[in-house]
Image 1 (cartoon, rainbow, N blue to C red):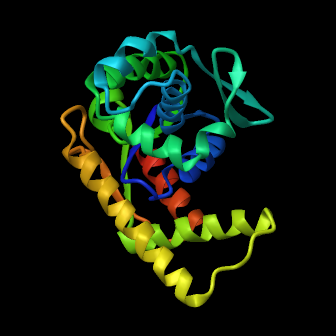
Image 2 (image 1 turned 120 degrees about the vertical axis):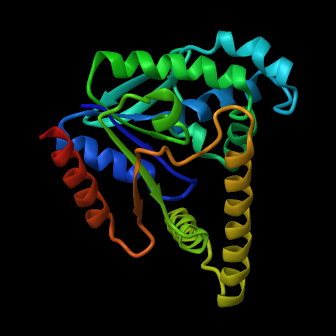
Length: 232
């Protein structure tokens, strides 16, 4: 069984997909990490992400591979593990830009479809239900309010800053940062939903799961229940 999960940025797709895959004994495929890896490659090549032709001219030189170490997905670029390098703000912005190019999407979609053809997967992204795995047995559209997604993102950032010994934000700074992140998320949603190539859409046969007021365990349980019904 292949499970496709779509939804906007910050809805918790990766976390939920990983846990669901583990529970089902399937392979988790983080398509966002694949776009991020290609974005890192473009940046390292010194290509301006807004130069579509320049981006398309070089992506063929990016060999992206997925591997699993103790159940944790690692992603490599031309033989180099870049799992940690692809989570920077610059890579995130570049990934969003180049993901709008049809040539980039077709390049990675073909790669993703080959993986799903070989093994049962739980795959998350923006166009998995509609483009990558249109025949998936289970399709989920995972969403949450922009405010809730911003709160989650800010909490992640604060935990990372604390782990690195950084200072805590004041209440005023926190509110300002929360507003900035929320606007960034809304802008990302707009770009994803209005891009020409494979825009973010809710597939007609996808089950909507709104995680705004749900715990992680509740969301995973809901998806496993949907998968169980589909298997009957």
